Length: 299
Image 1 (cartoon, rainbow, N blue to C red):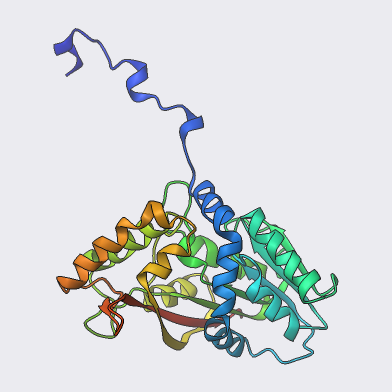
Image 2: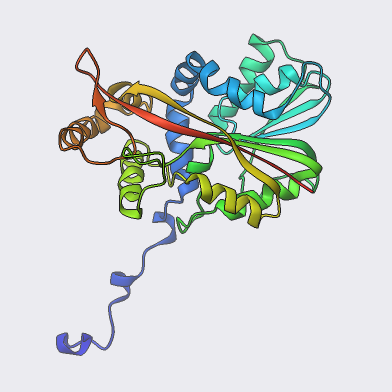
């Protein structure tokens, strides 16, 4: 084809993209949460009980426990600190990729909560290659992290992360995962692929660090493939909020407010978005996040 234009091959400038211009998903995630770290903490901490209490109950922790616990994708440490308070005689570690998030976690743990440094620590690292030895933890948790996990080629890495969780969990240890799931507006089931793609596209327009919301059974199958046993959903629940608040929580409200217009149109057209879009009594556009909590054991 090139010969038609008097060329033996494509000019190098056309097909070569300098590596320095390649932006990894890891970089996107760090950028998103570096800007919104404090805002994220302020918002999530206010609604923490509704999201946090179910996860804590699923862990089976009791006050005064003495375990080695890992909280992956810990963000500003809300879950990490709650786990450490229960696990007061043990050690709880929070792992996250964003430095700014970890700094907020440390400040809250040591200055606000006055927790001893022997009971809690925060580390920067990637969930696909955790900086821990095999069988280091009795309990490994993740809250609202899995929908961010991808590799550089943007391939879903559910199995990679679950295999790492398996590796660092002690024999007879437990994992607890809480995250949003794709659930059809038209019933309690995982929707067809195109509907899920729309749901995740909406999430990505609001937050580019989002990648994919897994279905209930996808996570179960992933846990089984990673060699965990007794994988199960222990709780499902919803959280409602206004779309405007949801967008503002990113710290990029002005840049992404066009999404509100798009979602209003989808709502008026009654399109299945896996979000149950509707208007409240104040004529505000609201939606629901569907959550699942999964647990599993390492043999």
